[in-house]
Structure formats: structure tokens, C-alpha cells
View 1 (tube, helix red, strand yellow):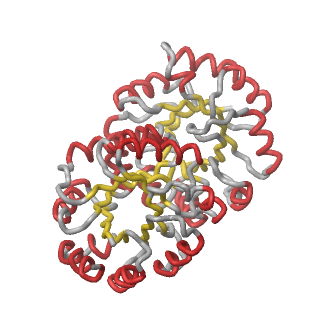
View 2: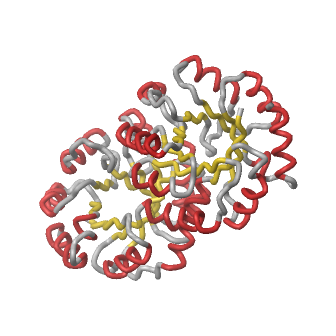
View 3: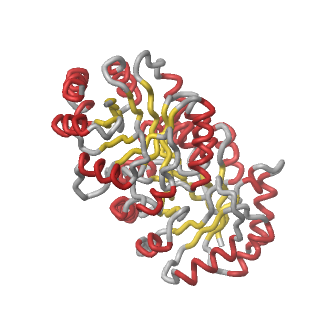
Length: 206
Length: 206
């Protein structure tokens, strides 16, 4: 199972520093939506040296103008996010663009109904990202949610999960064996030693 | 009825130039999502002089992390957009933040069901923005769509509409008297003389 570390709501300098430290330690480094909206893709491209080991995921949260955003985004990152709440036309067009570039598309499944989910599970190479809104007041059991999703949509091959994941939950998800990647934010990047924290996650997951 | 001009998919220099030209000609100047994701709020704030007449709408398309994005956004703009597809917790929190700042919230109603719409029409000071996805292949009759929306949700006081609006449709919407504002993009900013084009729209609308 891959470890994705989310870097968010920090200065671009701090984000670049964290990415450099974590490259080689984790599988995927995510630059969160706040970094894109605060600093823009052009500055991220100018100031982030190319990662040597990890893939770079940009949490674009595209919901319209899919080809424009994905074309710009793939100049910088390896994996881009699109909202499951986007129109089917948007999802299909960014999936086609992603396939043609040999890159990866991550569909953010936040706040969509089971009916809408059923409409959009037909992108076999896409990663389906399950999480609650950060603004949500409700609790979230990552392993139970992944199990439910897998039972409802067994055709989905690539599942990613996020939401307050700590070491015991990361271990539980690894043992469960359904999710392809887990996303960890604060439990790594908000510690005094992010590299050591990332290594602990890698240990319990492998 | 107010005229909102959308500036999108151009360089930041060009966007700033257009905004300066159109300030005083139109009611609301929109900086589109592409400008935010390409250049970031910090550069927009640094390079766009404060508008003297028009309100500045930033098409943030917030779908999570509402308070963070709206707090950053209101340092730059007067009106910010949030997706109707966001969680009710996100919508409520950004509405409260918007009210406390004396600013305006624009809810982007793209791709949401009537059931979800019914859940989120209870923000009396919010602007409800009706449009099709730019990626959508389907046709769009702005006046008919506004009439349908008004009939279904008569409690909504502030309606905005966008989608391929030309001079005859702007005039029709003004006569209809249901929408508070119309959003025009290419039909103004992609002409040889955007100021003259904006003036023509203002004439047919008033």
C-alpha cells in the first residue's frame, strides 16, 4: 500500500522544503488545494525542483474546464484530482487526456451520492479517493468506509482513503488490503520530525 | 440587472489590463478559476490595483476547507464562489463568515440535483448562480432555465445566470426581470474592443 503525504496550508517555501525532505521516504507527495489557490501552478512549477523518487499529486479539485486545468496541471504533476461531482463530460474528457499523457487521474468522491458514484465508476485506471469533507462535523472510520465502498463497487481497482489516519488505522488498512494508498497529512507534516513520522507510517504499512 | 464580466484563461497581465479598462463600465468583474489556479491569490492581490467602481468576484469554486479559502479570498475580492456540491457544513460555515465580513457569497449550482438544491436554498443573502458546465455538450437556454429555477425555488431572491449569453439573451433576461445579474465572458472580453462590447450589453440591459 502506498503512502501519500499531503502538504497543505503552509507557505510555498515550507511546502518545497517538506517535499524535498520527504522525497525518497514516501510514495506520493501531495500539494494541497490551498497551495494551488494561494500560489498558483506557475509559481509551484518555478520553485519546486522535480521530485527524484516520489510522484507529485496536485489537488486541483477540478470541477469544470477539465482539459484546460489538466493540461496546465500535467506540466507540473504526475497525478491530478477531479471532483466526482463534476459533470460526466468533464470526467470523461479529463480521463481521456490523462490516458493520452500516460499519467494518473484521482477522482475525489467527497459528497456524492451512491447514484452518482454508480455513474462514474467506469474509469478503470482512475484512483477513487474516499474521504469526508474537512469541514464535516461527522466522524469517519476509514477502514469501514473502504470496506463498504468495495462491497458496493467491487469493479473499482484503485482506492485511496484519507481522513484523520493515524498509525493504527494505517496498519489496519494495510492488513485489510483493499486500499491502494492512504493519505496522511498532519500526522506527518505537523510533527517536529516529518521524516521520522513518515518512516513510522511506512513501517506499519509494509 | 447587473452585468458581470468574466475574465478567464488569459495571462495575469492581460487580466489586470482588462479589469482596469472595464472598471466603471460594468457592475462586477470576475477573475475566473483559471487565474486563481494558474497565478494564485497572492499574485492577484499584489498585481491588481483595487477596483474603483466595480465589485471583484473571485471564482474560487470552494468545495472544502471553506473558512480557509474564504478568509484568504476576502482579502482580495468582494464576492466569492462556493460549489453547491460542497457539504452543507462547508456552505453554512462560509455563509456565516461571509455575513460577518459584510461581503457576498455566490453559490455555483452546477451539476447538483433538485433534491440537493432544495437543501441549500436557505441562505437568503447568497447569490445562486445557474449555469451548465463549460465542458457540457448540452445546449442551454438561460431565460428558460432561470424561469424554471424561479418556479421551483421562489424563495431564492438573488439569481445569477451564465452560459453563452449574447445581446438578445441579455435583453430577454432584463425584460424577464428574474435574474439579478448576468455573466458574460467571451462576448465581451474576446472582442477587439471590450469596453465598447460591455457598453452595448449595458444598453440593452437598462
